[in-house]
Length: 137
Image 1 (cartoon, rainbow, N blue to C red):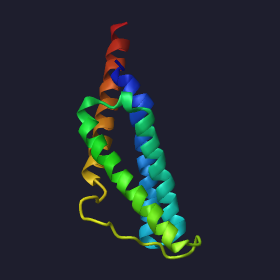
Image 2 (cartoon, rainbow, N blue to C red; image 1 turned 90 degrees about the vertical axis):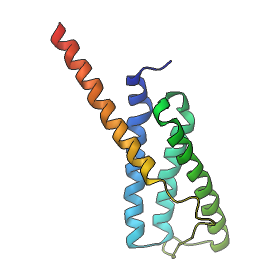
Image 3 (tube, helix red, strand yellow; image 1 turned 60 degrees about the vertical axis):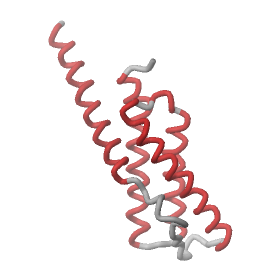
Image 4 (cartoon, helix red, strand yellow; image 1 turned 30 degrees about the vertical axis):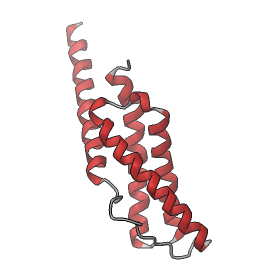
C-alpha cells in the first residue's frame, strides 16, 4: 500500500504537470489549428496516458473511476488521431482538424478539474501534517 505522500510525488504532481502541458498545447491549437500544435497535444496526452498506466498502483481510490474515464477518452482520441493523420499525411503547417466519431468521448474537463483539486488538497494536507510534526518536536 502506498502512502498519500507517495501518491502525490509519484503520480499526482507529475500528472498535473503533464495535464497543464497538454492544456497549453491545446490553447495554441485553438488559435492555429495546424498539425504542429495537434502533434504537441498528442505528445503531451501520451505522457499523461503513460504516467497513469505506469503508476496505476498509485492512483487514489477516490480518483480511480475518474482516471478510467480519462484513460478511455485518450484511447479513443489516439485512435482517431492516428486514423486522421494516416489519411491526411499532413506537414507541420497543414490544417489538422478532426471531429469525434461519436459524441460520447469529449475531453472530460470535470475529471481534469477534480484531479487538480484533489492534488491541491492533498498537498495542503501533507504540508499541514509536516508542520504539525515540526511543531511537536
